[in-house]
Length: 106
Image (cartoon, rainbow, N blue to C red; front, side):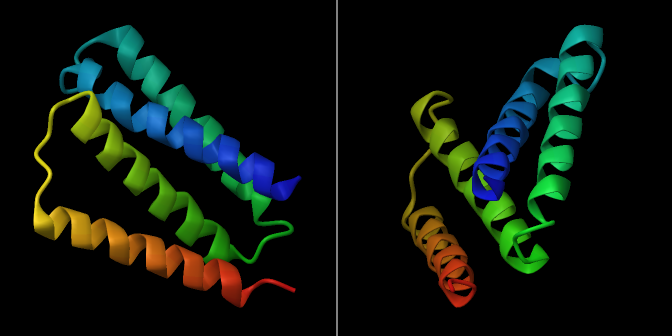
């Protein structure tokens, strides 16, 4: 169950980060309120997940998968460029998250 809560926290974090685009420097009220609400939900989920998942592993998965999802959405929907360096960096994130996950497997 902790992993599902962590996954929900990641989704909230990604949505909050993508909402930043619509806050226009936090000058628009409702997108800014939504962004803070999503980040709050994300941090709450992370705090619940670390009760059962080691904090280092949970944070690495939360931040790593969040980063990868935002980068992928940036490429697909926001038409950001795909470069060799960005692709290699994403691969390193995947390897790091997988390594930390596997190191805590029982």
